[in-house]
Image (cartoon, rainbow, N blue to C red):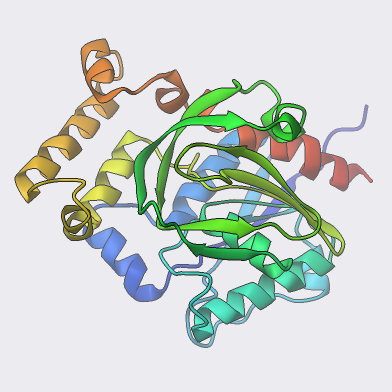
Length: 288
């Protein structure tokens, strides 16, 4: 059997510069850096990653043959709203459509699922139940999800890191709902549009306990207003517990108190969808 070719990924970080600065000021990593780390770890062959920030003014986005040079396209999460119609969002929706045209497999988290759906003709709206934050509980595979290669080896019901206000409300013509829970009906989706497939999850396999703690720190004011925490002191206590468990993952007492299971703690379980995307969609497209 011929040796697999090295993979080249394009990572699209949709955060604005201001939003990226806010994350870093609170000790959180850039979304693009989290994705690069995850992709390089999950890929079974040598890989490289290019990163672009399409929300930045004057950025040159790849087009045509430049897109086709990539074996996979990965979209990170983002704090923007896909239905906001701001110039930076419109640019990203159109760029997603451009990527669909060139047959390059795509994957992504949260914002990615919403971008994929809207670019292909679906709809996204504010979730009337409010914000899903921290750990998304009891995500259950649909019948289509149970047999879909995105979830090969995954439990039928699992928890995952999450942070979003919006939800997918209307799937495009060739969109398939793969999972959901009581809070968010569409927790993952497969979109087949034009010449490409885009597998996306509403949750965040790229996060770990430390990154979720830092994100919560950055969102503290908002979380207090939404009654996730009664006070900054209460929020900091919870954040410190997440950090402690991250540093001491054998603390079963802390894991039990926080209701954190292996699907959150074990990165080989948490990132299984990413590995499946690479193995079942990216690598086969390279060999064709």
